[in-house]
Each structure stands twice: as C-alpha cells, then as structure tokens.
Amino acid sequence: MRYNSVLQFNKYIIILIIFSQLAIITGCSKSADDLYAESKTLIMKEETFDRGVETLMKFEKKFPKDTRTPEVILALATGFQTHNNFEKAEDAFERLIEKFPDSPEAYKGMFILGYMYFDDMKNKEKAKEILNKFITMYPDSGLTVSARILVENIGLPLEKWPIVRNIR
Image 1 (cartoon, rainbow, N blue to C red):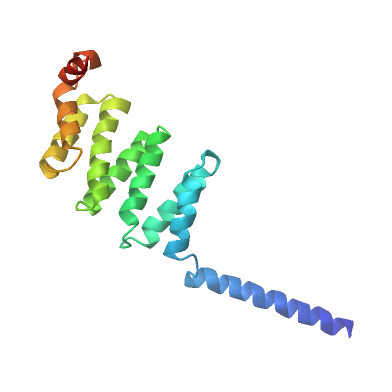
Image 2 (cartoon, rainbow, N blue to C red):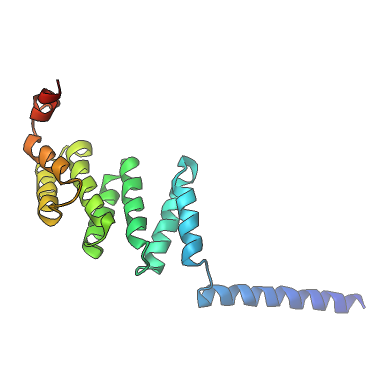
C-alpha cells in the first residue's frame, strides 16, 4: 500500500514538472496588462527599480505593437536618466523617437533628450542638434517655445538669458 502512495506522489511530481516545462516552452506568461501594471508599480520605487526596468523591457520586447509601448519606452528612458545612466537613457529615447515618431511620447522624449544633453551631459552641440530637430519636427507643440529658449541661450550663464533678465 505504501509503495502505491509513493508511486502516485512521484506521478504528481512528474506531471507538475512536465506542465511547468510546457509553460516555459510555449511561452505561457503574463499578459500585456499584467506586465504593464507590474512595471508601473516596480519602476516607481528605488528598491524595485531594477525589476521595474526588466519588466518594462519584457513588455517592450513581447508587445512591440501595443499602444502603451511608447509610454513604456519613455518610462525606461526617463528612469535611466533619473538614475544617471545616460547611455541607456539616450538609447531608449532614440528608440522611442525612431519607432514611434508620431506619438505624444516621442515629442516629449525628443525634448527631454535635448534637455538631458544640455543639463545632465553638458554636451551643448548635441543639445542644439536635438532641440533644433525637435523645433522642426514639432513646431506647434507646447514645448517648442522652451526648446527655442534653450537653443538661443545654450552657452550663456542663466542670469544672462534674456527671459531671466526680463523677469527680474
């Protein structure tokens, strides 16, 4: 009798192993909604930021045509920027702009990329290049005036910017 119980238990273990392997092989995993919700929660906390990045990257790879993918890439880019990983931020911003040029996230991403070159990376020439491209591509956006002000004043100390002098 005891021998039958052991055999039955072993059968259950083998069945569990087979099903878990099938799930891995067939790609049974989280839905787009699950990954999206999980990533939003994880990326916001410092202690789970790295897991959030991994989850966002999974989302982007698994669901490249999802309507939320531009938002996911923008979140990756700004997350990397916030954590001073400018190389990865730059890659993500450029990927966003290239793959989704007509999305609202692309114009935000291009502006933030130009500002990152200006403020974080101190690369005035690259900042001017990206911001001028932004002005050309998105002349009617709400950020165009800010982009023009930045381009006109790159290289000047803040107190010499005409807009700052006029405020005083």
